[in-house]
Length: 146
Image (cartoon, rainbow, N blue to C red; front, side, top):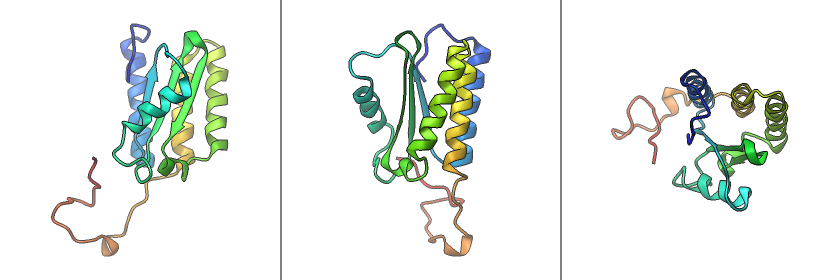
């Protein structure tokens, strides 16, 4: 997460906890970038999102970009994440966040939106032990991150 001096240590802890809980619940890595944007926000977000995973078509990831001074909020998802988080769910999370932002609650809006997106994605899929491929390279059924 890229931040300036705008957040207190307690606020950073709340944001980190929200991101961790969202990933734990959904199995999708969530990344948050807060700060000024240069150029087209959509293109910048898509470029950043493409660097978060090795294969965006197969690996889910969510990037939330917020530039309060420019009044920009962008939620970007990889194609794999888009299968689990609909545009409607992203739009509702964005609406919830911007409502909180308009009341001056940046951290509350972000944590609420992150939670909404994770809930929309649903819980991480678990594969029964009998169906897991037996491989010595994966331990405890945990997928490798690239």
